[in-house]
Image (tube, rainbow, N blue to C red):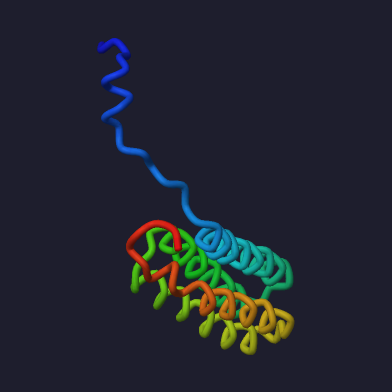
Length: 124
C-alpha cells in the first residue's frame, strides 16, 4: 500500500462536477419515470393490462434516458426526445391527460438544455 505524498495530490486530475442543467435533465427524466411507475401500480390494481404495459415501458424508457443524460451526447438527446414523444402518445392511450403537460414540460426543458447535453466538454 502506498503512502500519501504531496506529489500524488498534485498529479491527480481534477474532476468537474456536472452542470446544473445536466442535473435538472437527469433528475427530471427520473422523476417522470417514477411517475409512470406509480401509474403502473395504479393500473395493476385496477386490472388494466394494456395500460400497465404502456406505463412500464414508458417508465423504463424514461429511466434509461435519465441515465444517458448524465453521459451527454447525441444518443442521450435523441432517446430523451423519443421518450417525451412516446410519453405524450402513451398518455393519450392510457387516458391520463395530465401526463401530457408533464411530458411537454420535460420536452421544453430538454430543448432548452440541448446545448449542454450535446456538448462533450464540461460546463457552459
